[in-house]
Amino acid sequence: TLVIAESAADLERQATAAPAALATLEARDVSCWFGDRKVLDRVSLTMPAGKITALIGPSGCGKSTFLRTLNRMHELVPIASLAGEVLLDGQDIYDASVRITQARRDIGMVFQKPNPFPAMSIEDNVLAGLKLTGKKATKDEKEELVEHCLKLGGLWNEVKDRLDAPGGGLSGGQQQRLCIARSMAIKPRVLLMDEPCSALDPTSTRVIEETMKTLAEEVTIVIVTHNMQQAARVSDQTAFFLASHNTPGVIVEYGDTQAMFENPQDPRTADYVHGRF
Ligand code: ADP
Ligand code: MG
Image (cartoon, rainbow, N blue to C red):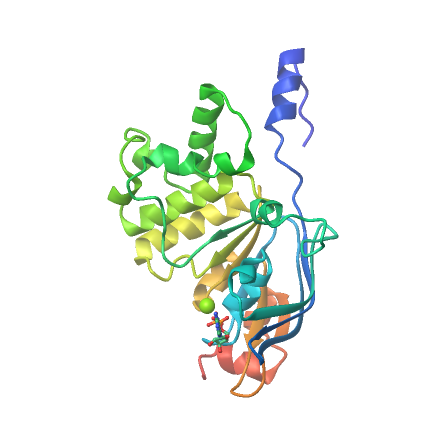
């Protein structure tokens, strides 16, 4: 949309308020081993800018493992080894020229179990990641950022009157929304979410689902969920993963979410979508 600036100050405001351009993340032939056991076999997937991509499939098929390859989390696991490329707007995050801290900043992660800093205030939890970026911000800028991020997490209205209360005093669902706000404060280009609602009650789940469309206006989202209704409700496209005892995880089918749920192409996807395994 075209917005006409009324003054130089307006122009400047528009320039600083503009979110970073949305980024596409692309995995190319990603394989992963734990020791000599191969758990992912040449997985390729494009996660387009500003879209929500859901990863579904039975437990143990490699969804979390794949998600972790997308922001170099496996570098914390000594027995893990990888092959393939992960391109953020065309740049391989595993390239020797990319620092791991930069990759983690660009590609944020929200985990299954909410993990705010419990003794830290709600406000400081949101701002915690800023220290990583080394960017200085004024008090006003920080206040604005806290409000914006808590709104993105769907938590603002519930906590605006007690921003100095400890994060650990919130309910589980609120803590998870605080974690989303904290992730967004460092302005990641991609947000990875690993079963973000599976530890939450249905009401909190619904609130998070409702915030996701707004979130996707600022960040490319990849969500792992074993809840197929959730994938159907929130995602634009879905990748169905499958593995067996002796075969590593692969993507069996990938496509537009609605189409995949209504008309799966692979019989194994059909079985899964219809709850037959
Ligand atoms: P999902 O998230 O789809 O349930 P995971 O990615 O967690 O599946 O697991 C894929 C496979 O990799 C499983 O067989 C699991 O046991 C194995 N695995 C996951 N993490 C590790 C690890 N740190 N060390 C060894 N094996 C692992
Ligand atoms: Mg998992």
